[in-house]
Image (cartoon, rainbow, N blue to C red):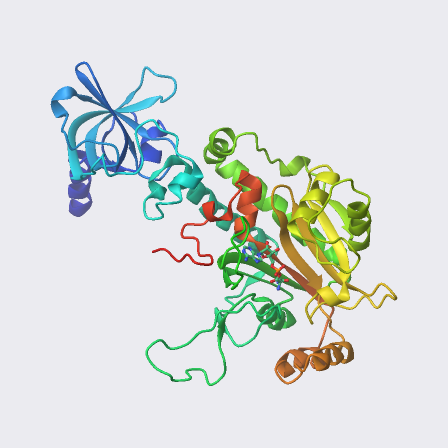
Length: 459
Ligand code: 4AD
């Protein structure tokens, strides 16, 4: 009893430390509090000093009102401060709560001349990208990172609610799942030691490991960093990106798979719009104005690859890349198809068999030989997800691996077809492209904290 009494007395005397999000909520009016953060604005006005403090917990900053006696030349945009005072109702509707300061302590000063962000200026995403170590101090990028964090939660929630088991698939692997040769090799830096005895690479996809696990858990997913040595400067490619991958056993058709893709896409989008309304609003209104996403109202279209080729060939638009049956769909084709279908997400199914990796299930249709593969194309971005039914028939899979001389490398993968093989399928969603799509962000480098791409590995 004695101990709890003294703790209460201590709390009563010491100002409660609050995050800015708690302080602005209005739940602590009249309380004596301490708030820590960085200055987003400094405005001396007559006998008063107005500051805005932000600690990253919310888009909204806390307005601090102080007597000009507390002014200090070190109180500048970007400096770190600790403010103690009383939370009061503000006369301004825009910010119903303000902190009447008794004490302001500069924890870390910030030279306003060298600081790259200036008072009252709205800096473009392109401009702030030049400062990967400081851009989280801007409203736009801190909003983005909060949205990204919440979207991560949304993805995990979706899978949890739908009975999926999360698997931590390895980052270092000895296989090239996609067979595209875009692998980063892993080596010991200080010697010639062959650490793994076999060539080892950073993963391009966790799919094959998920397939192992779907053979025991039925529904599995992974969500982690993925690496591709694509020598691309495009607005939708990174060398290190995050992929959400799912694998589902006992799938009978591509529709079983597209249903999961659609559900996850909708549910994650709705979650983000509901939980990050203010941050998303900032993007839609000020950072990428004009962009809107409402997954509830979206119809998802479905066309086969052959239909897509017909649509492209009947278009009046001139494409830089060929559109003959058998050609891979390029970004320009994907964007056209999305527009053609009314600017809504579009599933394209049944791609030419030869375009797809060895694991894709053969539709066994002739002469237009296709695989049961599907891509989800979305407005503004193009390809967001790629997936397929997997070839679960031992003889067909073995024959395809033999064609490419890979049957020994993948003997364990063939084993999965020998011991209790079931029809199954899965997909991968590019997490950064998902963020680009819901926020209308043009360049993928603006939706990840520390972008890695060819000729750039800053920090
Ligand atoms: O279509 P992809 O290559 O599919 C796979 O890797 C499958 N093994 C996934 C699976 O079935 N489990 O890649 C999936 C998605 C793409 O649709 C795209 O959104 C994203 O990953 N992606 C990239 N995102 C950013 N930068 C890159 N370099 C990307 N490459 C693929």
